[in-house]
Image 1 (spheres, rainbow, N blue to C red):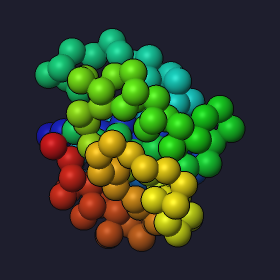
Image 2 (cartoon, rainbow, N blue to C red):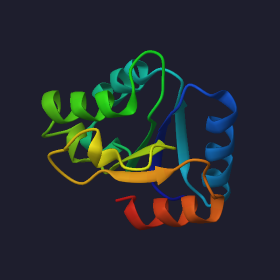
Image 3 (cartoon, rainbow, N blue to C red):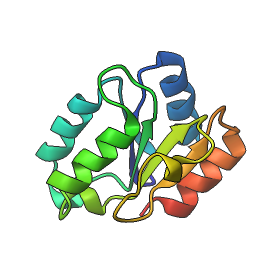
Length: 125
C-alpha cells in the first residue's frame, strides 16, 4: 500500500473520482468536503501517520484552498506545513493570487487523470 493522501473538495463527484483513481494505484485515501474537518483530523495524527500529500480544491464555500494552505503554513508550519500540498483549480496562475512560503503544486481542473496520478506519484513523500 502506498502512502496516505488527503483530498479536500466540496464536490462529491470530484472527491469520488480522485479517490478512486488513487486507490486503484494503491494509495490510501481520506477525503473531506470541509477543510476544517480535514485540519482537525490532521491535528490528531502522529507524525508517522501524516499523509504524504494533501490535495485541496481552490473554490469551496467554507474556506478556499489558498486560505487553507496559508492557515497551515502560518499555524502548523513545523508539522502539517511540511506535507506537500496541491491546489486543484481552473485558475490559470495561482501565483497571481498569493505567494506561499514554499512551493505548492498547482493541478489544473478539469483534471486529466493520468497526469493527476503521475503528479501525485512524483510529489507524495
